[in-house]
Length: 477
Image (cartoon, rainbow, N blue to C red):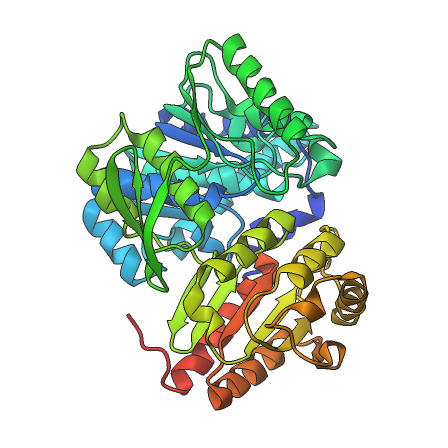
């Protein structure tokens, strides 16, 4: 994603690609006098749920009165989202009202980027390799959090763990491994065991580890067992106490479009985010934070979290849901949400907007959607996100055609639309597709569901909000 307001040095560094390894990062931090050594870190790796778990942890720490640095990726709408400070309880409440709150300011981002650029120049003059974009941004984040004297930093890995640039942290306060799945298999390995080995690379000597049960949807039992054994072996080797969050430990008591309530280990909690997987994400964060914050901070902190683009209900009437379901596990969670929310099954036929990256398992994603769709369906608009890895809208339409031909369930579903292939519309321009979809939804009082790549959501979220406000369906907080 591109944000023209971010320093050019950071934006153009994507030409150096994605390269795993710690040598470049360690060389850069040496030049910067190791700002990371001044940080107290909660380190988080995993395939799915990293951003949500990170935000839960940061929010609990902030409610407990701490000045908290939060480092996440990728950004959705603004580059500065990746580096944020929540200054205690007031900071958390301010973030809840304004999603720009706490983001690194433009002057600091430019100043620290210039400093990093000067040190990269020294590295190059010494024959060292140019750091990647993610390494540069991570260095800026370390500098900013150290400069701002954060009490705690919640640090999300970018890709993998063992060779991720964030893994220069030698002694974090805790390590968290979220749900594992089959993503980036070209870099992390083609089995869940290999992926677990890479993610588990953040585990450090004597540091407590909190891990999500590897038995997840779309994961065969044998693969889950292998991955669990890998993590247990790493923890044993590192003399690190490993605590598992087992599936179904969190029990939902109620839910609506404003959030859900659940119990976990004999305590009651409320969160604003949707989906059964968010109960697991919140519980994993609660488990990890038990010895770091008070019980009040755990209960209140997580109740104020809203993570953009993850089953995000930006409008209640009609429902408008944005979800970065970009792989089979994400799509499974999305349709499970539709199945759980009975109120959505009584709505008018919905508008669906979808755009994906070509390097994802699109075939499996569409098979899940076509076999399990459960709400009245009106039109599916397929778009091309503005990203070089994006699948063209016309190609996605063809893939949908094939999925509908394969499906043995779709036309037996009460929710399906007649002549479905005729209602698959390919539109290359995301903004046009969004404005047209909102206009139709307003006319028909129909829900809108946007699913697929976070790149798509980053392009579309502001456009949809603008159209909803223009039609007086959405008010500022």
